[in-house]
Amino acid sequence: MVPNRTCALCHTSKPILRRPKTGQQLCKPCFFYVFETEVHETIIGTNLFQQGEKVAIGASGGKDSTVLAHVLTVLNERYGYGLQLHLLSIDEGITGYRDDSLKSVKRNQQEYGLPLKILGYDELYGWTMDRVVEQIGRKNNCTFCGVFRRQALDRGAASLDADHIVTGHNADDTAETVLMNILRGDIARLGRCTAICTKGEDSIKRSKPFKYAYEKEIVMYAYFKKLDYFSTECLYAPDAYRGHARVFLKDLEAARPSAIIDIIHSGEAFQVAQDVELKPQQFCQRCGYMASNELCKACTLLESLEKGMGKLAVGDRNRRKLDDEPMPQGMRTIPMFQRSATTDSASPL
Ligand code: SF4
Ligand SMILES: [Zn+2]
Ligand SMILES: [Zn+2]
Image 1: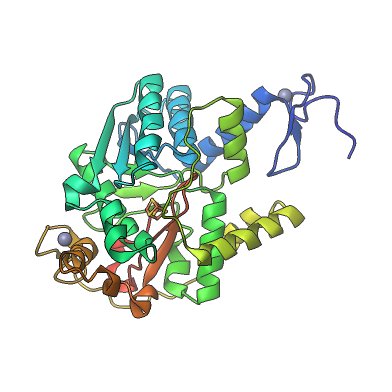
Image 2: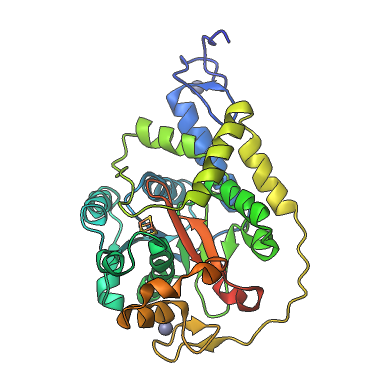
């Protein structure tokens, strides 16, 4: 294709990039504006925030959450959302990985002037992921990590008195999840994995303002804005299954860039029958967190670790019950326990 001489939007400046989502050749300011405006339209179109809400941004130091913190700060000011933004980081206790990425979060905290809370698995659970991996090895470690993180984010947000948790999950993550749920025939999760906001009884709202933002555009935004983020993958990242979905999605995207959005829209269009009776909400007898059994998922896993039987807690039978909500950019995936249709209050991110 012959390069355009001028930006496809302003028709005056020289284009410096081709937009992955649409193929348009744009100048830098137009790309920033169109990217930010699309996120704003998603927020407004889904009525995501209420004026005055306290919002905890799940900040990992990776590019998704770094761009999210930046864009929400910009939009909050530009459009007067009236949000009180906080950064909330979870330290899984992975030496050489999370300790470095938290340094990026701390630099961003200075830059945006946002309050930051860091909560560690160590202080919450008495276990770091380094110790979990020491016991169970590198298989299924993300299951432990995902269950712990979900609860840690809830606890961190509750301690901030936050109304809302936002995470940097992007369009690629969502499309991969749709594909995986189709391949597994997991209808219950397919029905809710495209929801931009989930909220269960007694739980804090969680949402994904980047649900329609392409990963490639997030990378471009971070690059051209010169944002400070950490891009190394977690040392313990496995998850071949999502890896297959990711490769497949990238192939589809190369053939037709709209494939990502098309898959999300297909996922949204599924009508899933709500014919499963809901179980009453319980609270964990050990820690008080919401649970569908006597113990919550985290305490069930902690008990198995304490008994030195962590490996058995996530055997193949339980593996079927894992959730595969991905970790925001820069990391890999966060498989979590499946919330069965009877425990919607603990639905995935
Ligand atoms: S890849 Fe993510 S979920 Fe898995 S161990 Fe690392 S930080 Fe935890
Ligand atoms: Zn322009
Ligand atoms: Zn518990």
